[in-house]
Image (cartoon, rainbow, N blue to C red):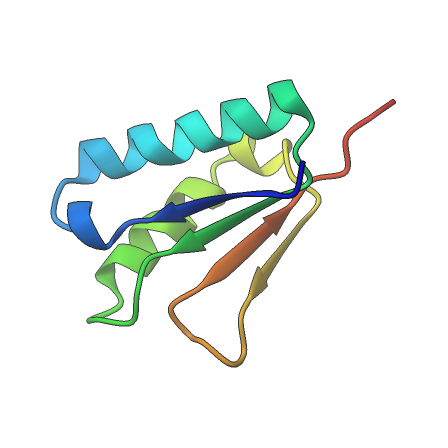
Length: 86
């Protein structure tokens, strides 16, 4: 199973596409019981990361995952962890 990896570099300026990619990854993680999503917004100006964090903080999204980690070695990478019910 492992993880889902999303690299947002190519769509950094298309907010609607970013949301679709994130939603698709969350839907897949939940339906297939995948324990982790790695999101790479990149370092850049930080705007893309803010967009991702706004998505992750929505109440309907936040209830789906267990924990969020920001990679302390690579500022441009986030990990979302799920604790799926049996």
